[in-house]
Image 1 (cartoon, rainbow, N blue to C red):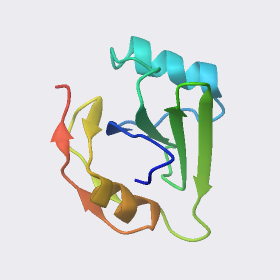
Image 2: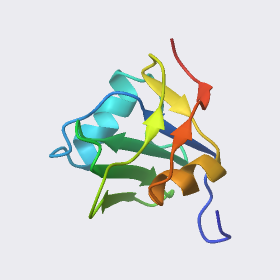
Image 3: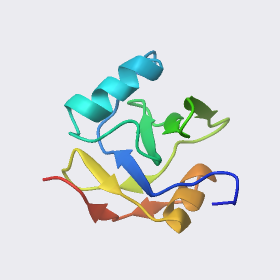
Image 4: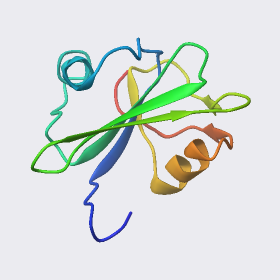
Length: 110
């Protein structure tokens, strides 16, 4: 994304998550449900059931970042079939956070 932050992969949970969870709760989901390392330099994206908010978890090597985006109007748009998490490209990520439609992605788990 830029020289200051190294992002190896971008993963998005296809199912809604309770966004009251903080860093530890979301890291636990990454580890236990997705079977992935929350300490990897990857973005992990979660949404609520109405898709009006996103939370993004990122570990930069020294600590966690937890980002929240709330749509003023409308919802985040993506169409993902049935999978626990998918890998998306930086272009798909940019479309997602700007409220544009995203579909597909590389399926990570079945």
